[in-house]
Length: 209
Image (cartoon, rainbow, N blue to C red; front, side, top):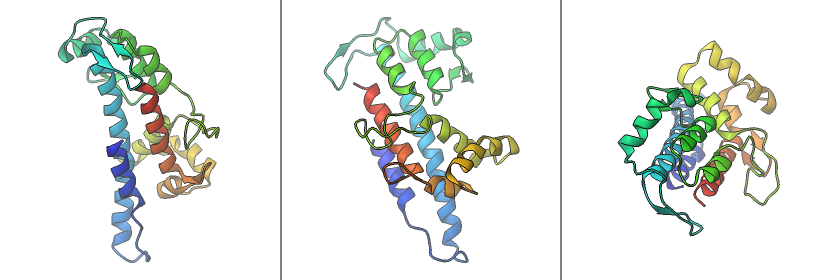
């Protein structure tokens, strides 16, 4: 939560008024960097909650006490995932691609974490009920992690393949470039980027209950 709020503060910093000012370039780089930082924060959250749940006794925020099904440390847990990599839908370098919900769910099930059903329900949503809060009742258009991944990959690679993956987002929001996608208004009066942050925080909230 703290990290996401810091990222949001950087994203919200206003652009310079003139395109000829050198600040426009730094503004674009900063905002694109916020997408990469948000993607990385979500990846580390998913990795952390699954691995911690695999080898620690812990109490959820709703007061439920869990103990790991198997007595593993982090090294053992990662080795188990590597040995059983065929059962993980998306992986690289011996670990799940944690930012992909299906891979996180696969890892939680493989490690038999006691809260796997909660984690699966939280990160596995195809869309959230609200881009603002769990009770607002506004339907999101897509999976936030998938949208963030598409934009992040385009920022990182700028290739034609990555460009094709963000075309649906451009079309949906009437945008011609990445900054316009990020600033696009969505339900609840938020910009798309801000709705991503809100959605991920909601998902993290659900996952830790």
